[in-house]
Amino acid sequence: MINNLSVLGLIPARGGSKGVPKKNIKLLNGIPLINYTIKAAKKARYIDKLIVSTDNNEISSICKDQNIEVPFVRPKKLSDDNAKSIDVIIHALKFIEKKDNKVYDIILYLEPPSPLRSYNDINESLEIFVEKNPDSLVSVHEANQFHPILMKKIENEYLKPIWKKEPEGIPRQLYNPTAYMRNGAIYIFKRENILNNILYGDKVFPYIMPIEKSICIDDIRDWYVAEQLIINEKK
Image (tube, rainbow, N blue to C red; front, side):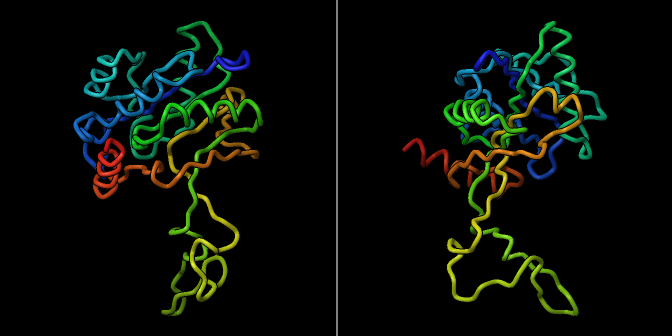
């Protein structure tokens, strides 16, 4: 709880993963990927309830071994490639509030493919969220390599800017304005917005993280990068 607001920690972890098969339970430097998120969440300060939403028995078993509640089997319609995050959240929120006979004011949404987010990142994000009172909070990192100025389209066989012309001879880090990308590590939402089918809302506050903590594993290349970052962190 933070400032008398109760916090539901929700880890979504479906079984289907195409980029990296069985990604959520694949061993990353000897540890199931999802356990990195579980460890950070368990060490965080303000979470009143931590649950996992999954459709997969193996994931459920691993989570229960870590003493994490898996209160339901996620419905199939919320577990395919077309399932929306907000529908997964609404399902989990309604289920657990009915089960616990308790209202959770804040939903902390932690996706397993971001193993390098720390419990301090979670604590700071929640503190900022309560202080600033936005509609939502989203973790981001600077996007020098993926600045929108670099994005092109092909028009009449030639590359044309999607947004505006790329400045010549200027280092990417000096592109203006500074661009940021969601890194997938931390999302914080308001209960009343979620139940009104609003995920982000109009006022989205950023939690800025360094690039080395912002890896989000979508494919096997990301996996190898994350593994090396974890190894380097332990040296």
